[in-house]
Image 1 (cartoon, rainbow, N blue to C red):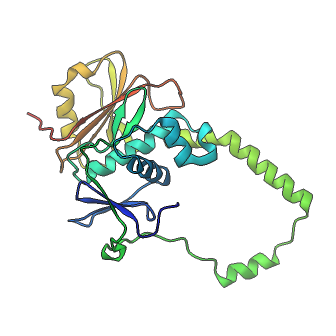
Image 2 (image 1 turned 180 degrees about the horizontal axis):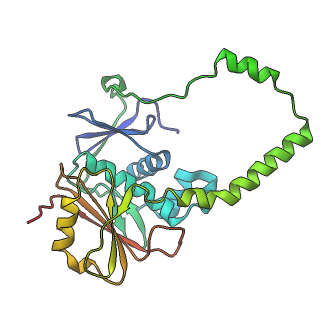
Length: 260
């Protein structure tokens, strides 16, 4: 990542985004949320282009690099959804990321963003797990391994590459919206999914009862809500989050939703 080590972004005067650490930190509670690498890069590009629309292709190329053409719509949307969930968990009332239909995403001008080059990262107790270094024992064991000749090495590399290409769609498909569980059947022609990290689903169920109009045409509704916050985020899709590239989704955000 090209950002300076001490550069961070202050969002809405309450959330610190540390690109180098790939995490969000609440300035008051010091709550920390570690972001997925692709989600962190998407947020970074949106922040760099504050108040400007960033296309899906631009986000894909920036976050996934050379492999972005192999990324499905659902994998991309999973990263954006994880960002929205993170802001919901930190009780941010405004919608930070806005979807502009058929154009892309943006962070609205009304969202306050400040760059902080002089922010002391040490002020926040960020406990991120680092990859342990190789022990001396492993180094000795590695030296005992027989060396492969050039032909054997090339054959192994080629086999691993082919296996990766064939297995990539299957492996990634298992992770799509894995943090959501199918709800019990409700009246209407649609499918409901709830975020499984909520302690209960009372607010989800209350929303469904109050908004039956959203359930139509066999749509798939992904509802994100927490008992501790008033925010509710809804994603309506024409099909389930599988490998389909023809899926079409719309996001609806309620910053201060109260069930009656």
